[in-house]
Image (cartoon, rainbow, N blue to C red):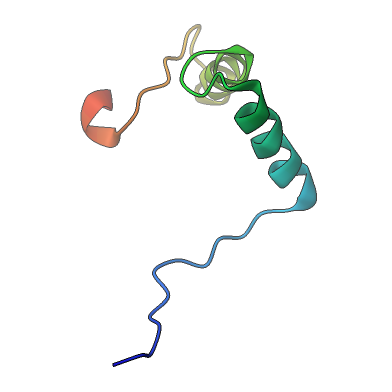
Length: 61
């Protein structure tokens, strides 16, 4: 069988692609300024004083 079955249809714009490339080129994939910015943005969105980025939903529990 040679048919491809797509698992996901990613939908992102040029700004998101550029942000991803900045992180990849920084070589600071797990801890760095992008994570700190993300944690702060998520905390603000949730109306909380702090946020912590984790690697999975299970770790978040």
